[in-house]
Image (tube, rainbow, N blue to C red; front, top):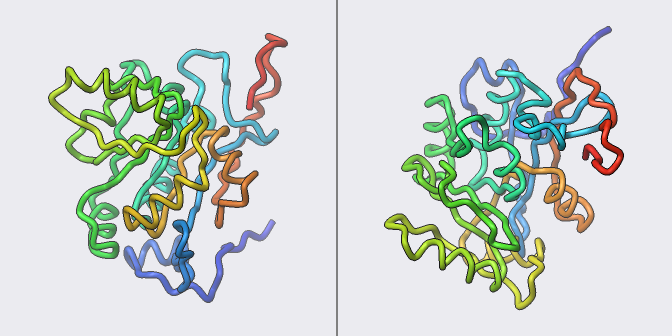
Length: 244
């Protein structure tokens, strides 16, 4: 079987290195970025049967368990390095908390990619937006305590009240973006605020399935990078649990 590179030959984005150009081809964004929201991309891992999580198996919920690939982890960093900010659902943080219970901070590595991002975006800080309508977030997660990234929390007024109560006893504060007047966070309004009030032009969605699905349903996803893992997850032995 012959394999070919799948990329748009008209793209002329800045180069990470000659080696990266050889492997991935050019990577860029359209000249016109919407004025009302960022240009949104995603990076998602599914099994061969289209599933994304062993939902019921503790410690094996997220995309890292589906792919189990250092190469895929590197590619995730490659994508993040090209964007102004990344966004992730609170459910993904909870599902990928790991054996230590505090997860990871989503910092871009290796250094060549971090340096590339600073050089091309002009942004020193690495912004990671965590979406939680309910505000039920464990602020002990590494992402909220790392000096390597600047986390923001996008939430509703109800969620903000809960988060602020928990933050009151912490020396380290986290920026809140409070949206709407109900208990449901509107993704379209969130993207508008990120673009128009915070200058985020390009945004990379890290999942999980629920938030990714909302972006697709509302036609807010411009470009998707899909990794197919050579696993078959199948169905759960517990009928009440659906593997997304």
